[in-house]
Every structure is written in structure tokens, then in C-alpha cells.
Length: 250
Image (cartoon, rainbow, N blue to C red; front, side):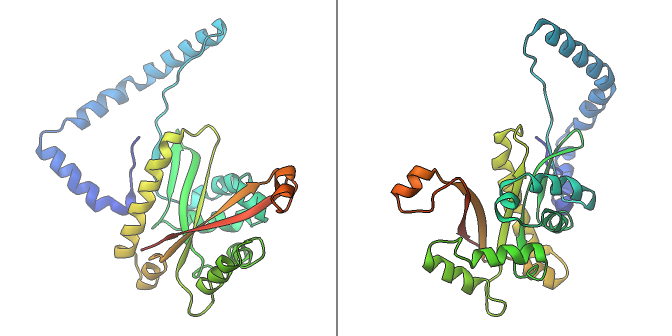
């Protein structure tokens, strides 16, 4: 898996210079692969057709890359959000959240293969975007009885207060069901690097401050078994119950 990051071009340039100084022949290898690409694709397609005809399984090699968010990713992020657990359980506006994620280049990772978006991981500031209806709905949810733990609900209300609150980041993540789970740790690490980069380099200063999170919150969709819920005194049924968790930030 390769992870080109526009926001960290300087570090990548230094690494490339060191590799070149060490006598790296990556460019030559890349060129050879490009020349063989067309014939390789034809061979793969022929092998796949033969395997399908024989009823045998065919292992396909897919290269995933990590990219920074871009405006053109908006409809694909929206599609993932609309079919994901967060918007399904909360009724959050997938279009509004998708625009926020795709236009925040400083923090966020898009997981792609062959130009298609397979998943994403990002963190957006609840304080900065609280006036956005799509984010405001989630802030209201965090202060509602959907958070059943009273002390936690009160603490969240204090953290998310319009004035005097903390800078809380909302983790947003969705991916296609066939996205390899092995990519998840790398996406998390990439987000961690993004947060560090943004806290030190994002411009202007107000943007940098909004991306220096003190807390991170992840909303989880939980489905309760009706019988188990009744026995435990909880709310039964198959409806989703909103859960929340915070990880100490910077």
C-alpha cells in the first residue's frame, strides 16, 4: 500500500532525495512496470475468464492508495455516509457531512483503488462547524437522552458548550464491506500523522487552532436484542441506540 500525501510533500521530497543519494533505482523499476502494464492487464483478464469458466477462484491483486481529501470526492463520501451506520441511526445529513470531509484537506484519508473510493477516515471540529446543520444535529444528539449515562451526558454538554467548551473532534469513518481490514491500522496511523501536521502547520492560525483537538468522539451504532434488553432493564427492540466514546486528545 502506498500513501501519497500532498500535505506532507516536504517530508516526502527529503525522503526521495535520500533514496536517490543512496543509489535508488525506483524510477527504472516503475518505468518497466508501466511498459508491461497493458500486456499484464490483458493476461489478467484472460486468466480471470478461464478461472470463471472452470468455476475456480481467482486471486486478484489490487493496489490501494491513501490520498488527501478533495472536492471531487464529495459524492462518493456522501454515498458511503448515506449507507453507513452513523447517518442511518441518527438521520444526520450525509450531503453536509460529506462536503465538510471532502473540503478539509488538512486532516483526512481517502482509501482508493483504481480511482474508486473504498473508504475514508477523518476528524472534524464540532466547535468550528457547529453552525452547520449536519454537525449541529450530532451535537444535539450528544446532549440528548440517547447518551444514557447521565454523568457522561453532562460532561459532553460542558465540552460542547458554545462558549467555554473544548475543541472536540468528531471521528467520521465509513468503508465498503469488501475493503481489506488490514488497511484500517494504516488509515488510523495516517490520521494521527495528519492531526500532528495540522496542529503545527495548518494555515491560517484559526484553522490550525480548530484542528488541534483536545478530545475525539466516536459515535457507534448499537443494535440491542429485544429479549436481552428486557432482561437487563434496557430499551428493547431492534432499534439503534446511540453510543459515544471519547479519547483524550492532544
